[in-house]
Length: 121
Image (cartoon, rainbow, N blue to C red; front, side, top):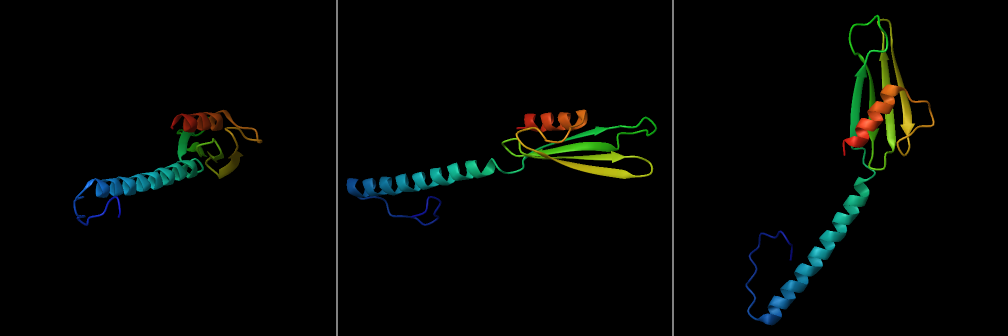
């Protein structure tokens, strides 16, 4: 018997049949509870906290074409990507993030993007 079954089941005729249905519902509830708990645990590893900071690193350019984007999972692991735009070129840097920090030196914009991503929960 499925919890979301469209089939019409017959109504219980006595207390024993009611108890059997309660037992089946309890089993289904326990199964769904376990599945939900597994999904919660699995979802921690999903990249889900994202933030983008746009900025102008060079005074000769007129707009905020450069950016830092932090993409983190539920345990503050992930990456930060920074793009530095100039008139003649565009450079892109990627840095791994573990527990909200990196073994590489982070710019102020990258730190801000990480902080903003952490707050987006």
